[in-house]
Length: 140
Image (cartoon, rainbow, N blue to C red; front, top):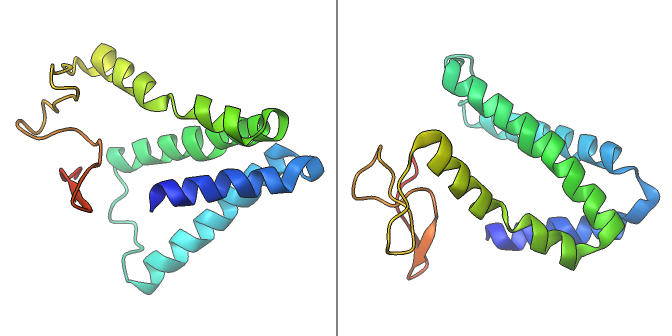
């Protein structure tokens, strides 16, 4: 389902074309996502300040880097280079993340084609491997 959503995002950005500055489009996307998530969390009683800690700060930083900065470059790339090239280049992020995790966190790369999380021995990291339609490997 995530792949369908990401494909739809790329196509919608391409449909917007150059009629909206990618920076403005990114702002619209971030605000819309923030409103949607806030509404969902409020309606389910999960919106609160009890989770404000250093882990939350990392999520904030991740959001700024990914949603704000990353999406701006992604949207600008789609507008300038088209969907197929931009999506193909953006799809290289797992390799970049894997290399960075080896360097920064000393995570080993296994010989079976995946990496093992040293924090959860015996479990694959957050690769969302699919088996019979189910997500295998809890990432929490």
